Amino acid sequence: MRRTSVISRLKTLVLAMLACVLLALIAPLFLVTRAVDEPFSGYSVLASPRDLHVIAKPVRLSVAPDLTLSRGVLYADGNAALGTPISRFVLDGPVFYLNASGLAATGGFDSDVVAPEAAVAAPLLEQFMSMGFDALTIRRGTLYIMTADGAAETIADIQAEVMGTRKGHVSGKGSFAVRGQRLTFETNLLPPADKSAAQLWLSKLTLKGALIDATFEGSIDVAADLKVQGYAELSAASLRRIIRWFGSPVPIAEGLNAVSLKGQLSWARGTVMVEKAKVTVDGSEAAGALGFTYTGEHPAIDATLAFNTLDLSPYFEALRSQSYVFDRHTWTWSAFDFTFPMLASFDADLRLSAASLAFKGVPLGRSAASIAVRSGKLIANIVELELAMGTASGRLTADVNDSPPRYALRGRIDNFEPAAAATW
Image (cartoon, rainbow, N blue to C red):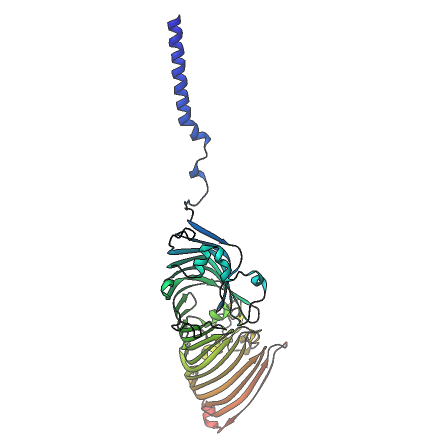
């Protein structure tokens, strides 16, 4: 009986062990949540950086230009506290403020700004501010450009790589978003040779996007008021889309589409000027100067342009009324929109001339005019307009602020030839 009892107990022990092993193998299949069933798109494992500093209080990086880092996370591939050399910094989620007004910053976070010399307590931040690195990666950055009128232009989602700072020559490339458009950039900066002179940085910049393609080569003056001067080239497939990009409502129509611009550019305090400019608009070439100011109540354009030839047909067709996006292509006056809604969206002071005009295939000869737009009021002085029947001059005024709009036209034709008028 004892032998039978021992064998029975041994069998029971073996079966129990097998049951435990089987349970250990099978139970996780039913009790543990399977990762493949989780609705995550992907997985990643990130190592903790060797040296990290959270910027929770604004730090002024530069006085000229007035650039402040409000917040962000800074980490590196070395350890500044232990003296380990650092060759690469990563700045994640930074928020920068650039004061481009030429005035001392007084509002908002400025009272809490930490001066550069007060950052000694953070060795990593101190080395970053002294540009003691070979490469810098900026991820998900935001830049607020403060202007003289208190407005701010936002450059969002900055993704950039900056290299070569130890030798003084800085190069960078990346992309950013402004007013809903994504732009890629590539730039090179060279500091001034004479440190005691005004702080002029030589710069070369390339911008590319869906709406615009531009290059710039010149200097940046950061000694006091931020100024930019140099040679620039710009091209766009649609000037109308550029205007809508800056917030002015213009319909889709002929005219003011393909445009290119070359010349000596200067920018300061919200005003862009282009001297010795060569402009091509809708295939018509012109030379002269133009400026654009975007800090007032309305965007303002100032230009003096001399065209070789200018075809007026696209601009006349652009006056057609828009009904449910479709144009009414008839020759009745009701098919044209003479309310000029664009006049309420911008100001202008234009002086235009052309060696020869054309309209609907009919040559019109030499012409010159000046056009002024202020707060929805238009004054156009036609100084000279050569026609087959004589030389015309006149004055057109329009006020689209009234309902209905008011217009006035007066003029004269010198050296009038009735025979030519009847033929035309």
